[in-house]
Length: 124
Image (cartoon, rainbow, N blue to C red; front, side):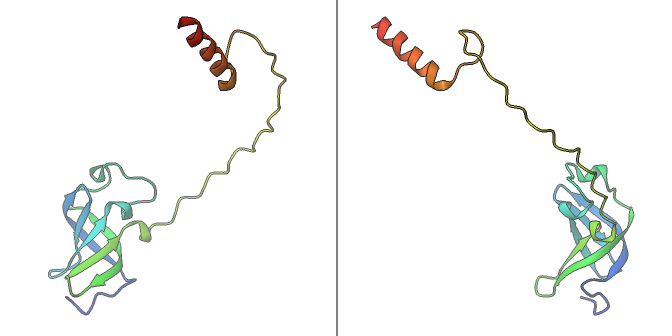
């Protein structure tokens, strides 16, 4: 592994391969790392092919270097500014309505249970 690459460093690289779980990015002639699918962009990524293609030039941040396994973990998402959260609409107050009992519509489980017991006894 090259001593030039350090954790936290932002490097430009080229996508060399895509798998369902992530994309391989060449950082230089000797070092290649993996951008896990969860590190491609902010938000959920269903299909990585919708975001990256082989040959794309990308800016990545080095998350981890495992010298023993010769693996470099990368993130594209860490190089981008997080999208601003949309303000939530104010919560409307819930108004409790008086419910009148009737034989039509929804019944509570307790009422239906009593009705079912009566029906089963009647069928015996």
